Length: 198
Image (cartoon, rainbow, N blue to C red; front, top):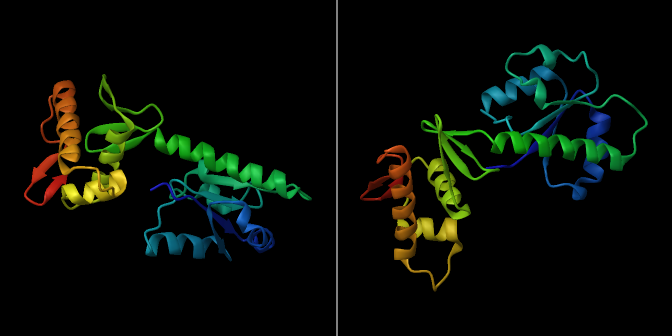
């Protein structure tokens, strides 16, 4: 969900440098010969770039004026020489800011889910959630089909022999009750024969 990537546009020297030290970072790195190829790829493959950094080599790059790109996603690296530690710090700082902003504003149905404060908000009402409740909501939201108790047990809790299926059902029941009590919403998590769904 929070896979971050760095797209390098018209800057093959930087790409070559980062490729040599790719073991130092945990983000994916992509190289694009020009911005047209980059824009075509994100459109044709429907690539999500909300939580990604786009590196360009000048402040006048045409991507700044493209309405499909958020200017906050763009990082300009234009002062050389630059130490590799400083370069990686700049990239990591940019990615951290993006991740924080992304996690502060996830829209699920009519709610805003803030992973940083572990709250779900609708209008002026706000409900505090546990980490497990957040995990349940994220998992159900990512999967458009109903998810069985066994699947929730395996994917959210991680498979363990000592976890009983009623533990999962109890968590779901409590989460649904909290949302009903706070927001008067009985349809946020819906129960189907096949399992649970948001």
